[in-house]
Image (cartoon, rainbow, N blue to C red; front, top):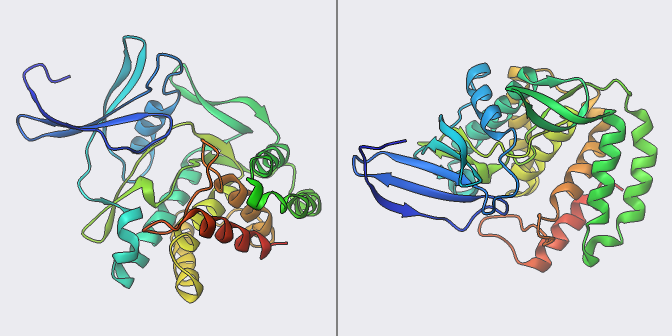
Length: 306
């Protein structure tokens, strides 16, 4: 990409479970981010296309894509590096007004994504000859059941006893969800750890890998859980939840029936985020709480729904 430049520094942060990331500094001071799969199997799928389309179709702040392709059998993606801190490490230290502003921007961005990327069915989003399409299209109600039940199946011993109650909730609330529920882009990892803030404002949203199409209520509920409850308690969490929803409504109406079906979406969101790709319980907060406190955190929020 830069044949006349030399690399003067490479930093490889220990983040990400399916991709590797390198922060590269060139001799002219320019900084770029290189991401790739660590093995030759599996490419980056729809991520490069989606990142470009988000920049083209919306005002959502993203890191400009500079290049993508395959080298020596490995898929790669190169973007500009956006200056700032990730919101995960910054959110609890922001002034209250700045945190509210950033969370509102996060909600507005999610609303813009849902408005700009509707789909006709739920499922995995793929790059099909330069356009986004859903592979193995599924009815949104059936897909949401699959997503929630898969999450329940993956719960560790400390949470597995919640399974029967969650199953009853699904059986009771899923029939209330219309079969023709709208479907939109589900950027499933839209959370503070993939958001960059600079000078108290949202500077970029990162990581568009492995996108899905799903009922937008699920996406809103999951981003809500990972942004408000994850870092705050009580009245402060509720204030930021209101800011997230207000921002969303600036770009799109709340998903149809969201308030009535929020327990369903929230239950699916919690079990879908309680365990990471490697099977470990996810740990909220910054600094992150310990494993036992993490189990108690997820348990408490599930029990409020049962």
